[in-house]
Image 1 (cartoon, rainbow, N blue to C red):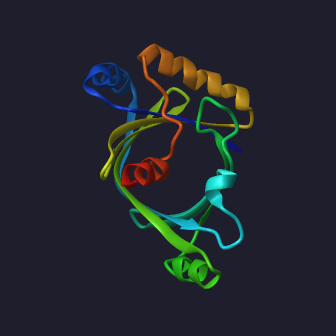
Image 2 (image 1 turned 90 degrees about the horizontal axis):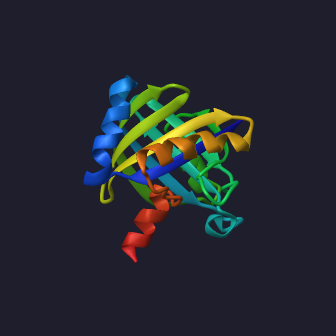
Length: 169
């Protein structure tokens, strides 16, 4: 299964259009998330465009592998997740993985038609909109592109990790 996803920075000009869509959407939940990204001892994830993270979200702990981005427009990629226990950080460290960066955010999740929409307040970055669609067909990313066009949004392909690392330079 592919995670088709596009993200955009929310600014005062886009806020009103986004709120119009959210009024038609079903509110699902609000949660705090802390993502811990790891570097690999066997390859450079920056060069391979991969990511390994542990996410703490409410009472869940999720290990996620994200493959390279699959196109030039979106953040779509293969993604695998597994529920784990707190010991996962120690296991990864024993295997030579090192903590690279922590990303903290408050996330509001909505369901709009076939989309999952998240409004993220990311510590040290600001507010972002993420639109996600699960599919086996990469061409379905056009559906998200059409929604972005409707909202006059400019896609941000960099991950929160990449944005924060760029900001720290």
